[in-house]
Length: 103
Length: 91
Image (cartoon, rainbow over all chains, first blue to last red; front, side):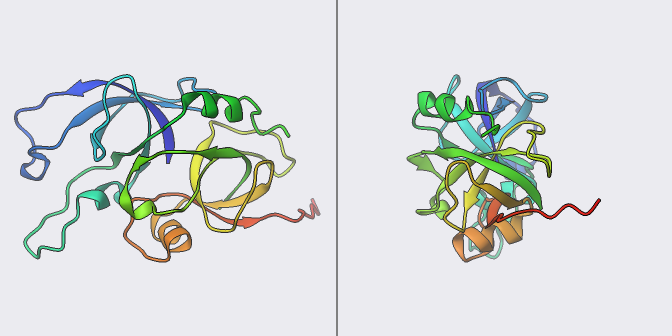
């Protein structure tokens, strides 16, 4: 998982049917100092995140797990990047990130 | 697995329910000599690691999910699975 800033929404009318009703966001991955790290990504939201919020996201197949249901006819949501949580305190992340692992 | 230094824990009230009470740690990947390498990542703790600890982080979903929550299938791609005592370098 990695920290990221939500930059905005992506609107796509034509999309895979399993993505219908899902919120797509543009996120900028961040390092511990809250500096941009890598390229912006499109993420599916699973927690109700909004633009400007500090969030964390999950990569890979695991990104589809929040949308899994027990129903046998359910299909997996095709995503490799999903917002999993919203960080409570940005100040706290800044404080611990500033140590940079040089301790 | 990779080596990392624990920077601290990140608190999130609004998060995936499967995370439960597991702590979300901010980890700076490091080289075997302890120098930082690349951007810091988040990993769930499964071994009670603390700030400043040198740890082993697994970055594969099934392993990370079972190690930190006891069950596979959670949206977890990374977990701390060990605290390093020391590294013997024979090279």
